[in-house]
Length: 95
Image (tube, rainbow, N blue to C red; front, side):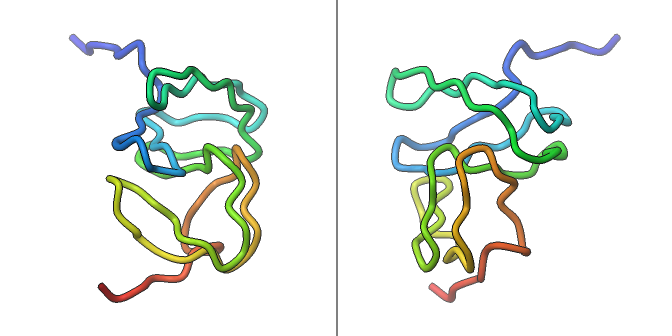
């Protein structure tokens, strides 16, 4: 028996600028994201595979990408709200 979670996305920390897909999500799908008690409705600009990230606010080029409240990379281009965040638009950084 497979249990379904009502949540489709997760934001780990209040300072995060990305959310993680808890299931495969489709381009054009509207998801609700809760950050600091505020509910945001975001329309996805790309398909987001399970476990992948998408931006919950615009991330200008050269800015920190934050997950778990920690910097996980630097945006290599402007990333729009709802856009897939992955190796094609994020550079790794050494800690």
